[in-house]
Length: 399
Image (spheres, rainbow, N blue to C red):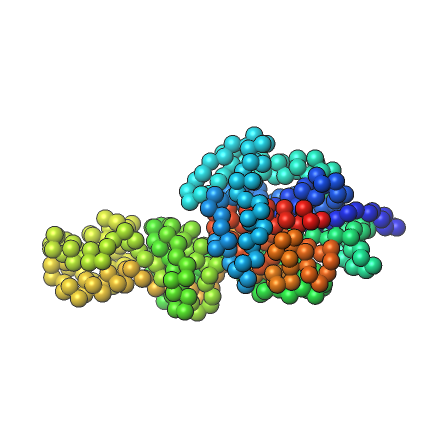
Protein backbone atom coordinates (compact mmCIF):
# COMPACT_ATOMS: atom_id res chain seq x y z
CA UNK A 1 0.00 0.00 0.00
CA UNK A 2 1.46 3.34 -1.02
CA UNK A 3 2.10 5.82 1.76
CA UNK A 4 0.16 9.06 1.68
CA UNK A 5 2.23 12.25 2.12
CA UNK A 6 0.90 15.08 4.27
CA UNK A 7 2.58 18.45 4.77
CA UNK A 8 2.38 20.48 7.98
CA UNK A 9 4.09 23.42 9.67
CA UNK A 10 4.73 21.35 12.79
CA UNK A 11 4.38 17.75 13.98
CA UNK A 12 3.88 17.22 17.71
CA UNK A 13 4.61 13.74 19.05
CA UNK A 14 2.60 12.90 22.18
CA UNK A 15 -0.97 13.94 23.00
CA UNK A 16 -0.49 14.36 26.71
CA UNK A 17 -0.68 17.62 28.67
CA UNK A 18 2.32 19.28 27.01
CA UNK A 19 1.63 18.01 23.50
CA UNK A 20 -2.03 19.01 23.51
CA UNK A 21 -1.31 22.50 24.80
CA UNK A 22 1.62 23.05 22.44
CA UNK A 23 -0.44 21.93 19.42
CA UNK A 24 -3.34 24.16 20.47
CA UNK A 25 -1.05 27.17 20.94
CA UNK A 26 0.61 26.75 17.54
CA UNK A 27 -2.66 25.90 15.78
CA UNK A 28 -4.35 29.04 17.06
CA UNK A 29 -1.45 31.04 15.62
CA UNK A 30 -2.40 29.76 12.18
CA UNK A 31 0.09 26.90 11.99
CA UNK A 32 -0.92 23.62 10.38
CA UNK A 33 -0.25 21.12 13.17
CA UNK A 34 -0.30 17.32 13.26
CA UNK A 35 -0.59 15.82 16.75
CA UNK A 36 0.28 12.12 16.97
CA UNK A 37 -0.06 9.59 19.80
CA UNK A 38 0.28 5.81 19.86
CA UNK A 39 -2.37 5.58 22.61
CA UNK A 40 -5.99 5.01 21.63
CA UNK A 41 -7.07 8.38 23.03
CA UNK A 42 -5.43 11.64 24.17
CA UNK A 43 -4.64 12.75 27.71
CA UNK A 44 -4.66 9.33 29.37
CA UNK A 45 -2.33 10.38 32.20
CA UNK A 46 -4.36 13.55 32.76
CA UNK A 47 -7.49 11.44 33.31
CA UNK A 48 -5.97 9.45 36.20
CA UNK A 49 -4.18 12.41 37.82
CA UNK A 50 -5.27 13.83 41.15
CA UNK A 51 -7.50 10.87 41.91
CA UNK A 52 -9.43 11.58 38.70
CA UNK A 53 -9.83 15.29 39.44
CA UNK A 54 -6.54 16.53 37.96
CA UNK A 55 -4.32 18.69 40.15
CA UNK A 56 -3.82 20.97 37.14
CA UNK A 57 -1.50 23.60 38.65
CA UNK A 58 -0.10 25.04 41.86
CA UNK A 59 -0.48 28.65 43.01
CA UNK A 60 2.99 28.56 44.60
CA UNK A 61 4.82 27.63 41.40
CA UNK A 62 8.42 28.88 41.49
CA UNK A 63 11.63 27.66 39.83
CA UNK A 64 13.09 26.43 43.13
CA UNK A 65 10.36 23.77 43.27
CA UNK A 66 11.84 21.96 40.29
CA UNK A 67 14.77 19.57 40.03
CA UNK A 68 17.11 19.79 37.03
CA UNK A 69 20.79 19.48 36.24
CA UNK A 70 20.44 23.18 35.37
CA UNK A 71 18.45 24.75 38.20
CA UNK A 72 17.87 27.96 36.19
CA UNK A 73 16.50 26.42 32.99
CA UNK A 74 12.81 26.45 33.96
CA UNK A 75 12.76 30.13 35.02
CA UNK A 76 12.08 31.64 31.60
CA UNK A 77 9.11 29.48 30.58
CA UNK A 78 7.55 29.50 34.06
CA UNK A 79 7.76 33.29 34.31
CA UNK A 80 6.12 33.78 30.90
CA UNK A 81 3.20 31.38 31.45
CA UNK A 82 2.08 31.26 35.07
CA UNK A 83 -0.37 29.31 37.18
CA UNK A 84 -2.67 32.36 37.01
CA UNK A 85 -2.54 32.23 33.20
CA UNK A 86 -3.60 28.59 33.09
CA UNK A 87 -6.27 29.17 35.75
CA UNK A 88 -7.73 31.93 33.57
CA UNK A 89 -8.00 29.42 30.72
CA UNK A 90 -9.70 26.88 33.00
CA UNK A 91 -12.21 29.49 34.16
CA UNK A 92 -12.87 30.64 30.58
CA UNK A 93 -14.11 27.10 29.89
CA UNK A 94 -16.45 27.25 32.90
CA UNK A 95 -14.57 24.57 34.85
CA UNK A 96 -15.22 24.79 38.59
CA UNK A 97 -12.12 24.27 40.75
CA UNK A 98 -10.95 24.31 44.35
CA UNK A 99 -7.71 24.68 46.26
CA UNK A 100 -7.04 21.57 48.29
CA UNK A 101 -3.87 22.26 50.32
CA UNK A 102 -0.53 23.97 49.75
CA UNK A 103 -1.71 25.82 46.63
CA UNK A 104 -2.87 22.67 44.83
CA UNK A 105 -5.75 23.35 42.41
CA UNK A 106 -8.17 20.57 41.38
CA UNK A 107 -11.28 20.31 39.23
CA UNK A 108 -14.45 20.13 41.35
CA UNK A 109 -15.83 17.54 38.98
CA UNK A 110 -13.48 15.52 36.79
CA UNK A 111 -10.11 15.47 35.04
CA UNK A 112 -12.10 14.79 31.86
CA UNK A 113 -12.91 18.52 31.86
CA UNK A 114 -9.23 19.41 31.40
CA UNK A 115 -8.86 16.96 28.50
CA UNK A 116 -12.06 18.30 26.91
CA UNK A 117 -10.77 21.86 27.35
CA UNK A 118 -7.45 21.01 25.67
CA UNK A 119 -9.21 19.24 22.81
CA UNK A 120 -11.51 22.25 22.38
CA UNK A 121 -8.44 24.50 22.23
CA UNK A 122 -6.88 22.18 19.64
CA UNK A 123 -10.14 22.33 17.68
CA UNK A 124 -9.99 26.14 17.63
CA UNK A 125 -6.56 25.82 16.06
CA UNK A 126 -7.60 23.23 13.50
CA UNK A 127 -5.11 20.68 14.89
CA UNK A 128 -5.09 17.33 13.09
CA UNK A 129 -5.14 14.80 15.94
CA UNK A 130 -4.28 11.19 15.12
CA UNK A 131 -4.40 8.61 17.95
CA UNK A 132 -3.76 4.87 17.95
CA UNK A 133 -0.98 5.14 15.40
CA UNK A 134 2.48 3.76 16.20
CA UNK A 135 5.30 6.01 15.00
CA UNK A 136 7.43 3.83 12.75
CA UNK A 137 10.19 6.20 11.69
CA UNK A 138 11.44 9.77 12.13
CA UNK A 139 14.09 11.23 9.83
CA UNK A 140 15.47 14.71 9.17
CA UNK A 141 16.89 15.98 5.91
CA UNK A 142 16.89 19.19 3.89
CA UNK A 143 15.34 21.11 6.78
CA UNK A 144 12.33 18.81 6.95
CA UNK A 145 11.29 16.18 9.49
CA UNK A 146 9.56 13.15 8.00
CA UNK A 147 7.44 11.02 10.33
CA UNK A 148 6.06 7.66 9.22
CA UNK A 149 3.04 6.38 11.15
CA UNK A 150 0.44 3.81 10.19
CA UNK A 151 0.06 4.00 6.43
CA UNK A 152 1.03 7.65 6.21
CA UNK A 153 4.05 9.91 5.93
CA UNK A 154 3.97 13.47 7.18
CA UNK A 155 6.56 16.19 6.79
CA UNK A 156 7.14 19.48 8.58
CA UNK A 157 10.00 21.90 9.22
CA UNK A 158 9.36 21.57 12.97
CA UNK A 159 9.07 18.53 15.27
CA UNK A 160 8.10 18.63 18.95
CA UNK A 161 9.02 15.78 21.31
CA UNK A 162 6.23 15.68 23.91
CA UNK A 163 6.05 11.95 24.61
CA UNK A 164 6.90 12.22 28.31
CA UNK A 165 8.94 9.72 30.31
CA UNK A 166 8.58 6.03 31.20
CA UNK A 167 6.58 6.55 34.42
CA UNK A 168 3.30 4.58 34.60
CA UNK A 169 4.02 2.20 31.70
CA UNK A 170 0.56 0.64 32.01
CA UNK A 171 -0.73 3.90 30.52
CA UNK A 172 1.50 3.39 27.50
CA UNK A 173 4.49 5.44 28.73
CA UNK A 174 7.86 4.61 27.17
CA UNK A 175 11.38 5.99 26.81
CA UNK A 176 10.70 6.93 23.16
CA UNK A 177 11.55 10.59 23.80
CA UNK A 178 15.09 9.68 24.86
CA UNK A 179 15.67 7.41 21.86
CA UNK A 180 14.56 10.21 19.57
CA UNK A 181 16.67 12.81 21.37
CA UNK A 182 19.78 10.63 21.08
CA UNK A 183 19.03 10.03 17.41
CA UNK A 184 19.39 13.78 16.89
CA UNK A 185 22.52 14.08 19.05
CA UNK A 186 20.91 15.43 22.22
CA UNK A 187 22.23 14.21 25.57
CA UNK A 188 19.97 12.53 28.13
CA UNK A 189 20.30 12.81 31.92
CA UNK A 190 19.80 9.29 33.30
CA UNK A 191 16.02 8.92 33.86
CA UNK A 192 14.86 7.67 37.25
CA UNK A 193 11.51 7.23 39.00
CA UNK A 194 10.37 10.33 40.93
CA UNK A 195 7.42 11.03 43.24
CA UNK A 196 7.52 7.30 43.99
CA UNK A 197 7.05 5.11 47.12
CA UNK A 198 10.30 3.88 48.67
CA UNK A 199 10.95 0.28 49.71
CA UNK A 200 12.60 -0.83 52.96
CA UNK A 201 14.90 -3.83 53.48
CA UNK A 202 14.06 -6.92 55.53
CA UNK A 203 15.48 -5.60 58.81
CA UNK A 204 12.76 -2.93 58.78
CA UNK A 205 10.06 -5.63 58.71
CA UNK A 206 8.67 -4.37 62.02
CA UNK A 207 7.48 -1.22 60.26
CA UNK A 208 5.72 -3.30 57.62
CA UNK A 209 3.35 -4.42 60.36
CA UNK A 210 2.17 -0.82 60.34
CA UNK A 211 0.90 -1.05 56.74
CA UNK A 212 -1.88 1.52 56.31
CA UNK A 213 -0.78 3.70 59.25
CA UNK A 214 -0.19 7.36 58.38
CA UNK A 215 1.21 10.30 60.34
CA UNK A 216 2.44 13.82 59.65
CA UNK A 217 6.23 14.13 59.52
CA UNK A 218 8.98 16.33 58.16
CA UNK A 219 10.95 14.20 55.70
CA UNK A 220 14.54 15.02 54.72
CA UNK A 221 17.47 13.41 53.00
CA UNK A 222 20.35 12.70 55.38
CA UNK A 223 24.07 12.54 54.61
CA UNK A 224 25.62 14.98 52.15
CA UNK A 225 22.21 16.30 51.08
CA UNK A 226 21.27 17.08 54.68
CA UNK A 227 18.83 19.95 54.93
CA UNK A 228 18.63 20.55 51.18
CA UNK A 229 14.95 19.67 50.96
CA UNK A 230 12.37 19.15 53.69
CA UNK A 231 8.69 18.32 53.28
CA UNK A 232 6.08 18.49 56.01
CA UNK A 233 3.20 16.26 54.98
CA UNK A 234 1.83 12.80 55.73
CA UNK A 235 3.99 9.68 55.57
CA UNK A 236 2.30 6.33 55.03
CA UNK A 237 3.68 2.94 56.03
CA UNK A 238 3.07 0.27 53.38
CA UNK A 239 3.65 -3.47 53.16
CA UNK A 240 6.76 -2.68 51.07
CA UNK A 241 8.07 0.43 52.79
CA UNK A 242 7.13 4.12 52.87
CA UNK A 243 4.74 6.27 50.85
CA UNK A 244 2.46 9.28 51.36
CA UNK A 245 3.03 12.85 50.16
CA UNK A 246 6.11 13.57 52.32
CA UNK A 247 7.87 10.43 51.09
CA UNK A 248 6.85 10.92 47.44
CA UNK A 249 8.29 14.43 47.64
CA UNK A 250 11.60 13.38 49.16
CA UNK A 251 11.91 10.41 46.78
CA UNK A 252 12.73 12.80 43.94
CA UNK A 253 15.89 13.79 45.83
CA UNK A 254 16.73 10.29 47.09
CA UNK A 255 19.60 8.29 45.64
CA UNK A 256 20.57 4.73 46.49
CA UNK A 257 22.47 4.67 49.78
CA UNK A 258 20.88 7.88 51.10
CA UNK A 259 19.19 7.92 54.49
CA UNK A 260 15.70 9.37 54.71
CA UNK A 261 15.11 10.98 58.08
CA UNK A 262 11.63 11.65 59.41
CA UNK A 263 10.81 14.11 62.16
CA UNK A 264 7.96 12.19 63.76
CA UNK A 265 6.58 14.88 66.05
CA UNK A 266 7.22 18.11 64.15
CA UNK A 267 5.36 20.35 66.60
CA UNK A 268 7.25 19.22 69.71
CA UNK A 269 9.84 21.67 71.04
CA UNK A 270 13.21 20.57 72.38
CA UNK A 271 12.92 19.17 75.89
CA UNK A 272 9.29 18.07 75.53
CA UNK A 273 9.93 14.61 77.00
CA UNK A 274 11.70 16.00 80.07
CA UNK A 275 8.75 18.35 80.50
CA UNK A 276 6.35 15.39 80.25
CA UNK A 277 8.41 13.56 82.87
CA UNK A 278 8.17 16.52 85.22
CA UNK A 279 4.43 17.00 84.69
CA UNK A 280 3.40 13.34 84.55
CA UNK A 281 6.13 11.15 86.07
CA UNK A 282 3.84 8.10 86.32
CA UNK A 283 2.87 8.01 82.65
CA UNK A 284 4.72 5.95 80.02
CA UNK A 285 6.45 6.99 76.81
CA UNK A 286 4.01 4.88 74.84
CA UNK A 287 1.09 6.76 76.41
CA UNK A 288 2.68 10.12 75.62
CA UNK A 289 3.47 9.11 72.03
CA UNK A 290 0.01 7.68 71.41
CA UNK A 291 -1.50 11.07 72.26
CA UNK A 292 0.19 12.49 69.17
CA UNK A 293 0.73 9.43 66.96
CA UNK A 294 -1.34 6.41 65.89
CA UNK A 295 -1.31 3.87 68.71
CA UNK A 296 0.29 1.10 66.63
CA UNK A 297 3.10 3.41 65.59
CA UNK A 298 3.67 4.53 69.20
CA UNK A 299 3.98 0.89 70.23
CA UNK A 300 6.53 0.06 67.52
CA UNK A 301 8.60 3.17 68.24
CA UNK A 302 8.83 2.34 71.94
CA UNK A 303 9.85 -1.18 71.02
CA UNK A 304 12.59 0.15 68.72
CA UNK A 305 13.76 2.68 71.31
CA UNK A 306 13.87 -0.04 73.96
CA UNK A 307 12.07 2.19 76.46
CA UNK A 308 9.42 0.94 78.87
CA UNK A 309 8.22 1.91 82.33
CA UNK A 310 7.17 5.24 83.81
CA UNK A 311 8.85 8.43 82.60
CA UNK A 312 9.74 9.25 86.21
CA UNK A 313 12.02 6.21 86.31
CA UNK A 314 13.93 7.21 83.17
CA UNK A 315 17.00 9.45 83.15
CA UNK A 316 16.97 12.82 81.43
CA UNK A 317 19.81 11.53 79.24
CA UNK A 318 17.71 8.58 78.04
CA UNK A 319 14.76 10.89 77.30
CA UNK A 320 17.00 13.34 75.41
CA UNK A 321 18.35 10.47 73.31
CA UNK A 322 14.80 9.31 72.55
CA UNK A 323 13.85 12.87 71.57
CA UNK A 324 16.80 13.10 69.19
CA UNK A 325 15.95 9.78 67.56
CA UNK A 326 12.28 10.73 67.15
CA UNK A 327 13.29 14.06 65.62
CA UNK A 328 15.49 12.38 62.98
CA UNK A 329 14.25 8.80 62.72
CA UNK A 330 16.38 7.20 60.00
CA UNK A 331 15.27 4.88 57.24
CA UNK A 332 17.68 3.57 54.61
CA UNK A 333 15.52 2.50 51.66
CA UNK A 334 16.85 -0.27 49.45
CA UNK A 335 15.03 1.06 46.39
CA UNK A 336 11.76 2.42 45.11
CA UNK A 337 8.65 0.90 43.57
CA UNK A 338 10.02 1.98 40.19
CA UNK A 339 8.48 3.53 37.10
CA UNK A 340 5.33 1.42 37.52
CA UNK A 341 4.35 3.48 40.60
CA UNK A 342 6.24 6.72 39.88
CA UNK A 343 4.04 9.73 39.18
CA UNK A 344 6.76 11.31 37.03
CA UNK A 345 10.25 10.74 35.69
CA UNK A 346 13.28 12.69 36.90
CA UNK A 347 16.09 13.24 34.42
CA UNK A 348 15.45 13.24 30.68
CA UNK A 349 16.60 15.32 27.72
CA UNK A 350 19.46 17.50 28.94
CA UNK A 351 18.53 21.17 29.10
CA UNK A 352 22.01 22.29 28.00
CA UNK A 353 21.07 21.38 24.45
CA UNK A 354 17.82 23.39 24.51
CA UNK A 355 16.87 27.07 24.45
CA UNK A 356 15.17 27.98 27.74
CA UNK A 357 13.08 30.57 25.88
CA UNK A 358 11.75 28.42 23.01
CA UNK A 359 12.59 24.80 24.02
CA UNK A 360 14.29 24.39 20.62
CA UNK A 361 17.37 22.19 20.27
CA UNK A 362 20.41 24.42 19.74
CA UNK A 363 22.10 22.01 17.32
CA UNK A 364 19.00 20.92 15.38
CA UNK A 365 16.87 23.86 14.17
CA UNK A 366 13.19 22.98 14.18
CA UNK A 367 13.47 20.28 16.85
CA UNK A 368 11.79 21.01 20.20
CA UNK A 369 11.39 19.09 23.47
CA UNK A 370 8.81 19.91 26.15
CA UNK A 371 7.14 18.63 29.31
CA UNK A 372 8.21 15.53 31.21
CA UNK A 373 10.56 14.45 28.39
CA UNK A 374 12.92 17.25 29.48
CA UNK A 375 15.19 17.17 32.57
CA UNK A 376 12.85 19.35 34.65
CA UNK A 377 10.89 17.66 37.45
CA UNK A 378 8.49 19.44 39.77
CA UNK A 379 7.36 18.75 43.30
CA UNK A 380 4.15 16.88 43.99
CA UNK A 381 1.02 19.00 43.80
CA UNK A 382 0.45 20.35 40.28
CA UNK A 383 3.98 21.60 39.60
CA UNK A 384 4.63 19.11 36.78
CA UNK A 385 1.43 20.10 35.01
CA UNK A 386 2.46 23.75 35.23
CA UNK A 387 5.83 22.88 33.66
CA UNK A 388 3.93 21.06 30.90
CA UNK A 389 1.77 24.13 30.22
CA UNK A 390 4.66 26.60 30.42
CA UNK A 391 7.13 24.65 28.27
CA UNK A 392 4.37 23.84 25.75
CA UNK A 393 3.42 27.50 25.53
CA UNK A 394 7.04 28.51 24.97
CA UNK A 395 7.45 26.04 22.10
CA UNK A 396 3.98 26.69 20.66
CA UNK A 397 4.73 30.42 20.36
CA UNK A 398 8.08 29.72 18.69
CA UNK A 399 6.89 27.21 16.09
